[in-house]
Amino acid sequence: SVSPIEQAIWDRLLSVMRRVYLSSRTLKVDGTERQAPEQAHEQVISGPGIGNTVTAAEALGIGTLREEDLLWAIRAISARIYLTCRQIRELMCIFSNQESRVSVVVALFLRCTNWPINSNLCRALLLQSTRCQ
Image (cartoon, rainbow, N blue to C red):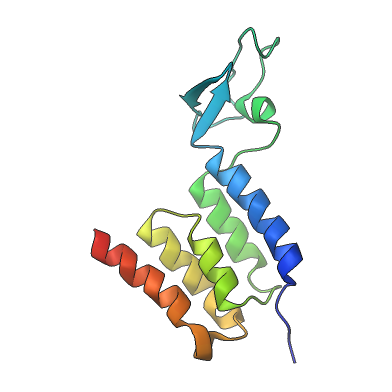
């Protein structure tokens, strides 16, 4: 019998994914929110609050990922983990793009330990997104 990732471990992993992905959208420098660069490792930001010229990722204290990078990482680990529907839904909520949410479900639904019973948790989010468009 297989068991999903423990919830405490999943919460830490999800927290890192949220921070790394969502931080690529906005960046706070000197109390001012700015749009973070697409290629954070190539762009530089300087200002009196930072002291030096640093990359956006360094200014945040973490790396940043684009949506495609995060989806690639999810696909890469999908063969090594088992999740619950609740965990898949939490992951889907990171993405605002319908196509990305579908990609998450496609990559992970066969690795879901309770999909036959609780798939409505994920299905409802997909249907809700479709209706909003």
